[in-house]
Image 1 (cartoon, rainbow, N blue to C red):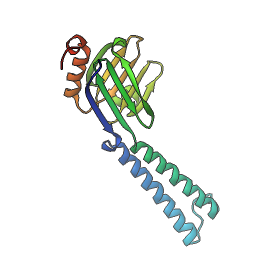
Image 2 (image 1 turned 45 degrees about the horizontal axis):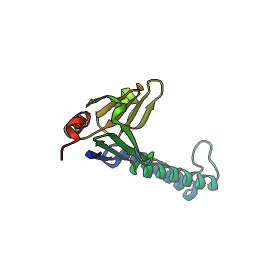
Image 3 (image 1 turned 60 degrees about the vertical axis):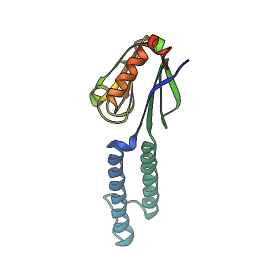
Image 4 (image 1 turned 180 degrees about the vertical axis):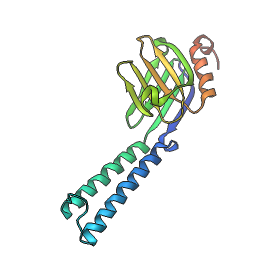
Length: 182
């Protein structure tokens, strides 16, 4: 009977990415505000090739809606990693809504340690390197669980609880000691 050994949830709200997005939204709103003030209030065309007042209004609304939607999308991100006696379960909504399972019998190796998110995967979030068959699900930091499967692919899950995750992975990888423990 499978049982949960360890569960970790990591929301994007605790990383630096939402702050970067917020600064970008503020810059867009600032630029839009300057354009509105100059073109609609002062009556001077805004920019080298100014658009109509209607065009300025609609492009501003569209920019604001798209930036806000991206900001909300990022804020709703939440990496859930579960170590079970029969393998690893994970989900990363809103990108990956359904829980996925890596059965223990498909796992060749698991290591918990440092990695280089920018060099190896190009940053944080859901990252897939097609040529190297590597996938990463990470929110922040440089510590993760690297899972190597029998088919040669690797999946990396970021973690903020390195010691707890090491203990859980060690327990999972020794199933004969787990089967009869209470």
